[in-house]
Image 1 (cartoon, rainbow, N blue to C red):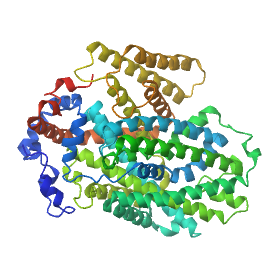
Image 2: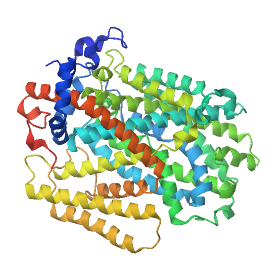
Image 3: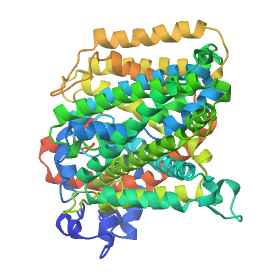
Image 4: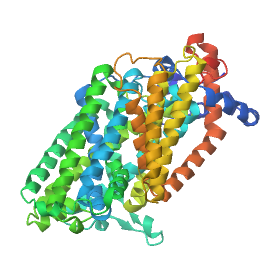
Length: 593
């Protein structure tokens, strides 16, 4: 069976020179039109197999990783990961979204919104950290979900996180042009090309955004360690600018601006939290670098948790500083800090703010480029995407093909699409993925194939279903905005009861080998509840986009990804020993619950 490609020859190719059909569709199902027709007729049984198929830790760490040919270089330590985390997170969100939400949604209580979003992000960091330590591969959440929830759910989740990376990267690149224009005292549209024949939302073509993405791509493909050094130099400068904003801003503080602290009530706090969660997006990219980390058990917890702690603290202090400088009604939603300094007689400071924003957005783009390429690389290793994308260059030790493809897609979106359109598409996919990772962690701790009894498996399934149902009920009622507290008096205690039952009546089947989330099941259950609650605060258009994209993913999966991954899994099952099988039919005991 011609599956897996030619690792040696494929790894030596540069770009797509000399590529053949075998680089993209080497599987038996695509060997001829007749074979593809037979595969399509078997879609039902194959889908049933892949729905129940779960990978294994060892499979992800060895067989799947080997499909890239060359190995990634293990050059990173906790210092690199911490600065990657800071560089990934502190970018356009704090400089743009803070003013927008403070003025229109929450008022000075924007600091509470950052706390809520930060708590949600930190709970997800804990879940990601345990997985990254136990399964240190480039696939991030895709690999974790493949092991615990199966192929199908992993593919749907990974497709959404890649879209989120692409959209957020394009949004940051467009914002880069805006702040660059501020630095030069020009209007952003002065640097954009007006294509009058296109729709208004797509008519301002942004060549600067494309150039910035191209430069970031060059850094990302040359060296991960070099990218790390460049990132933490820029991030240190960025943190210094943030400290300047805080110190200089507090010298112009007026406590009277905080008197009307929560003008939009608690609903405003949570609605803003769902939007401000975008300001924390990016830390998951750090988990994809676990494969390049020297000592994952030590470096990943220190790097990830340390970066998120510092980021949350800086966000909260920056939000307080902005609201002390100006009444919330006077905050400029587009350039809040620059305008606040100008209004307080420090017009020169806007250049420092713009400089800091440019630094921050550059690091966000760089870490995003590194992370999204590694997601795509691991997906391609499973042949759910063409295996050509999984190739790691033997000299640079980086996934050149995946990096270039993702950044070309990002550049196309950034070139045409207005920043406001992009901003409306963010956050929902990320919250969905983080919720799934928390569910996967509960499955990992409480279910081990062949060891967990049927009774414990059924109790675990019932408890997780109850946690999800009560969380969805709470979020749904909140989203309906009907008022009253009685439904919450039912759903919140029910969530507590479901989590308590899991804690009291289901024994843990597996202890973490190196580093584990504390207070299981309470922290993962809280992560599920908070992420779902924030989803309930997101507008309907975002859910429509989520549904359309997920439907497109399903079409691709049913016609291409399913058959490629099925053939690959069967070939591996035929070659591997019984304990290393990655196949649903051949290993029924490996099915989830």
